[in-house]
Length: 91
Picture (tube, helix red, strand yellow):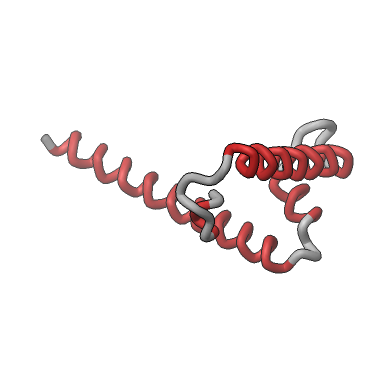
């Protein structure tokens, strides 16, 4: 992750540990907040996370982009499986 953002290919272990601690703390905090506002009694949903990041437009836009890409991939896989089943039944 750090290399992808322009860091050295082999960063210092201390730096990696610090970034890992920051990311784990952020994700844990976000999950706890999502659980607190969650409407399904302890079950987290995508909408809970989207609600939490609604004011951070770059994150919100990236999340919605990734969710739409996930849906497109799901549809493509489904179409591919249907095509495979048709080919198997023809043979």
